[in-house]
Length: 181
Image (cartoon, rainbow, N blue to C red; front, side, top):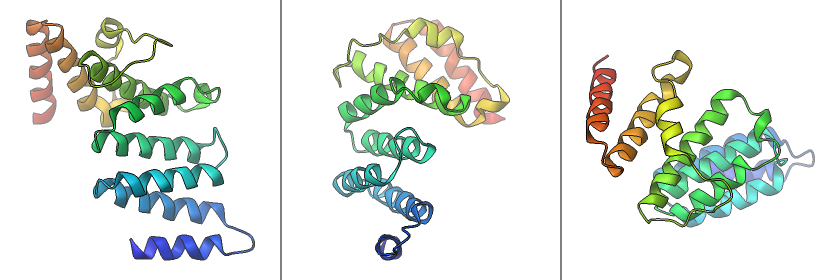
């Protein structure tokens, strides 16, 4: 924590202001706040990072991704949902790599689930289609290795919520099979 704070202060004082180095240390500091579940400092750092990053850049999207995770882990679900809506409706969202777009769609699914559970108010801007998400997200694709479990989990949660128990049990079996591999 101290090293990151010192490095950030050092780079901010440089006349040429090396933004890449600043971003690296800011992201590390943000991860520390996330691990400590320190929402207030994380939110301050997020706000500061928005001032130094270019809207729509990869680092800008990364900052929002880290902020989303912090919101979820600190149970600031409404802020997480607002962040997701903001990103999905951003004009540069379409330019993201497919794996990044899919990550945000999975985040949208978790927010929709929280909305159906009554934990957050969901905006009516774009209605999330649960059935489409359950049926259309292909499972076990090699490029989705890092998201297979979160996808299976949210699909299972929706199936239980909608009382589709046989389908939910099939997803639990898929999870068990996936984990045993």
